Length: 318
Image 1: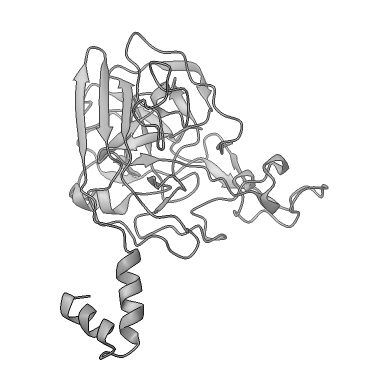
Image 2 (image 1 turned 135 degrees about the horizontal axis):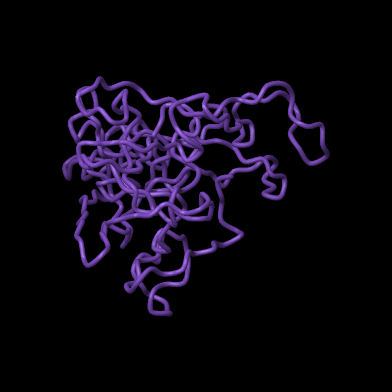
């Protein structure tokens, strides 16, 4: 609304429609500037950002998501030479971070009948529950943290797309790189064709268990527990990753793929996630006001902090 329109509204010389326009402008959040800085120090890579994307986010609040997006304070840390663990890790926290500083989160806080103990958690990207995802497959937490639940379309466009190349889009919490679903057909041939990698998760068949405290009905994809890993049924392992060469790692590396079907964002890590990706965990230095208190703690320095074991009141991703 222009100053002149505002003045006319006050004078009662403009129709009542201007009142609604004024209200809309009054509640519209101030524009934020994208900020991210990726540096290396010793054995680690640091991704510091305000969590605001380098593309225009959707309008929030919106139907299915009542939260307003706001800048955050993140300091994520990942090893430059990540190492595979004996077993995949599954703990609470941000799963990874995009190159634009926006975190990835696979799971949701929404559960059947709002009962976390039920064991049935709704999926964000399968279309059965409107969680207010925008056109970039992202939405906002109560803290104001904008985050991706599936393919970060705006970021991919900003990076030039993945039609003709493998596109590196971020780092997982264990340090292994993240790509879109398109990778070399043969993992060891950089001159081969690109094709879409398929996950090895499948929708379960039949009916859910007829149990007290459960939703019942047939498996249809609305819950995380509607899917199961079937080894060898796709191109990717249980972490939604594979080992092969990439443009950034010509000697080969383990890498993750964000897929267009479940699990979308992987649900576990090949290596050990850094505690800087934990949510609301104890801030480095042991006191309030540490970096990332809104949406995620900052990284501590030193040699390999112990993995953060999570907060039982935060959503996990089984």
